[in-house]
Image (cartoon, rainbow, N blue to C red; front, side, top):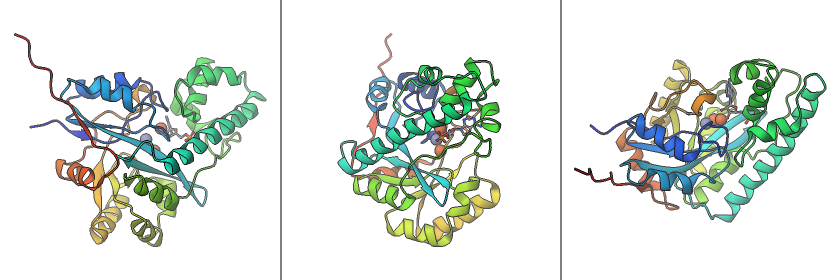
Length: 289
Ligand code: AMP
Ligand code: FE
Ligand code: FE
Ligand code: ZN
């Protein structure tokens, strides 16, 4: 029996705590048969992940988790196997990364009025290309102001915590179009999570399907049972792909690799639908005896 397929994991390119090579090593150690690297708004980890996967027997699915926003709710769209040189998609994600940086600086300026925290503290924590609240959380932890990321998100970094600032992101419709036009496969990440579930009405879902939406991340710890039932009904109605994944962030979140998984059949549907990039299927290193 091949190991589980986990199509949602972050590295230190965004807010995971492990480098892409360490993430691949963790996926191998967890016994996965396939893993996707899906950093927020960036493909900067792909090359290192592919190199690290070589010889492990793992299938690596290059991907990204694109930030989009609708009616103040954050909607994350997983993008698989798109062309990483597609100009329109790369320009849009570069814009999001730039605006995330300005936004993080603005949040830190507000926080520094009340706490001993400087922008340099955050820059020390953000080792990749995409800066987010998790790096502010790590800086707050390093300063001894909170105990861990979860505590930071529950208080200072909470959207009602008094320091929150939004950042620019395209609409889900634009995101799905850009991903699809780049030859990629668009799957909405944790669509049952509170904010996303509010804005993903039947009407919006229908529009997204028309724009090229391929599927839903059905099995994710943030999707409550009643949402999974609704999402499965919508998936049946439109013949959508359904996935399950961990949303691993290393030690940055409790989510463990393989805690949810995707069937081989669904992975094949993703691969068949993509025209931008092929998955990297590595052969296991020959045993030396
Ligand atoms: P941002 O996109 O900068 O607003 O930050 C949202 C990111 O923070 C998401 O990618 C989540 O992975 C992460 N996040 C949200 N809540 C938590 C939490 N309680 N603990 C750790 N990370 C979190
Ligand atoms: Fe994240
Ligand atoms: Fe997400
Ligand atoms: Zn994620």
